[in-house]
Amino acid sequence: MIVCVCQAVSDREIKKAISDGADTMRALRQHLGVATQCGQCACAVRELLDEHTEKAQRPAHPPIWHPAT
Image (cartoon, rainbow, N blue to C red; front, top):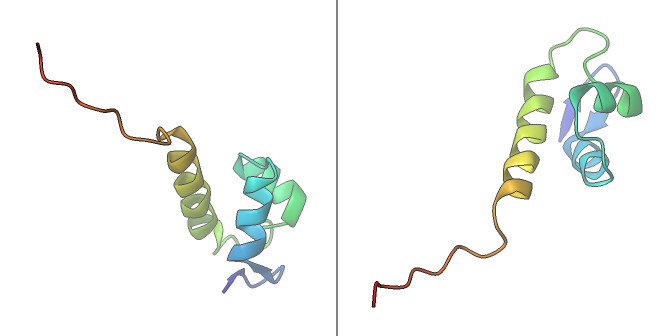
């Protein structure tokens, strides 16, 4: 799906850039040009960035609960 109409940038391209290390809005702007024209995509780009950041901060496996012995 196209997220940034002005620069014709898709959500896949944004996700790839984030996976490749673009971990800030500034980096995404510089790398892809998103949110540099009309700014209508800024919220959607931020959501994609936040989703990736939240996933990266979660532990790979939930902690195992052990009852007190």
